[in-house]
Length: 377
Image (tube, rainbow, N blue to C red; front, side, top):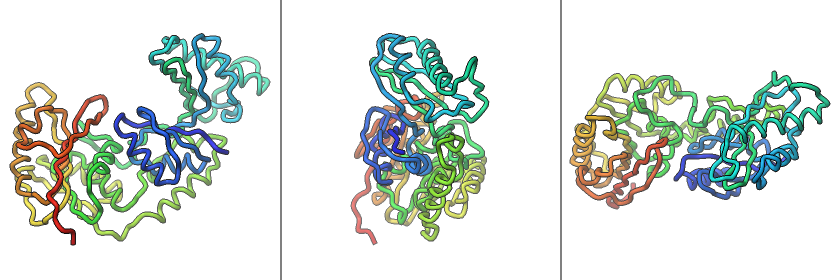
């Protein structure tokens, strides 16, 4: 069966997710925070297992215009819910409404739930309440500019939860956002990769997953595994194929440094959980003390932003030290994420390119300093 599917992601990452889906063989259409594509059960499994930068993958059941609750009820009831939900299905309904006449989200949610119950009760000849004792099918009704979209979430816990992070620091990067930061650079697996403020090690671990072509969803479970209409053999086949595509032989040069030894220990534990401890060198080192005789490489940093009271001076001291240290590395590209709009002045030079990204709800800028061109060996 062919499904209309949609991948959700943080604003600004649509092109990355579209590129990932296209690499899997699917045609895409982008909207703000969404990438639409079509596919069968294998597409659902592949997207969940392989997408590095998306948050979740949903099945689009229907879209229609609504301006009254009667229209919402009838539109929802007309959808083929019995094709997806068995009689004992648990189906929590989340509701959202943006710039629409039907602006009360609790009412939108309640009407949608009532319409689905009504439809399933008729189909299954069921009197009274449905049991909802079976597998969970997370549903959402989203109304944007008076157009309702009904979806089933196939992912469950967000795709950023890879399953390897057993410990973290104060403000860890989400795994999918870290993967996006790596994929927005000019890094290739044959180049050195350095994270000077590694924290819990997420950036180096995601770089290693990319370097080895390891599917990020290999270690985790998904909501669709319990869906009645999904053949359980599909996911296993996709994971087996992904295992065959991994390149375990490539030698990676990936370093993660942090001034805090406790964070280095945490990073090592996470890398061990991911099966990548031997691919990454973690070491206690201040950013200002980094030295290398390698002529080229890539530095990706997510240093403290100095957003908390009294921390801005310390953050800017670090930016200044980075600028002075990295000035001696003209053959290296540097990519630094921060919410401090005064970063370039403190760092000491203007970025080659600056990209706006959202780290959660926080507006940040990705400052890119491209390396001077040198011949590649």
